[in-house]
Image (cartoon, rainbow, N blue to C red):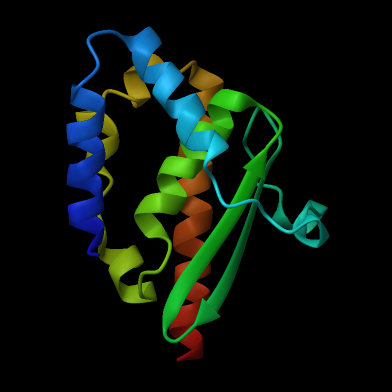
Length: 139
């Protein structure tokens, strides 16, 4: 599935909720469904710098696609990284690098996060794109 299609699905899913408490609950549910990162990847090298909570992000490159797994020690942050993994996992490096992240504004996520969580979100996206760039240069 294309990144834009997944982003549009998320926009549609979040638009079903009337208030932000419901959206936070949905994000927590998304976090619970996140494919868990193997404990051997919960290392300092995989911690995303700039996040208030601990967020581990691991990537693998299989069949020309980048596959992400992640975890966090905070439930909201785990929901945020689950959204990003859903959007960017199983995509080519080029698709990840050229993807825009306007969907984050469209679901209202950035404006409802504390400044430190918003910085963490930016750091997560940056790390995802760095992995994609590294895989692209290997090709």
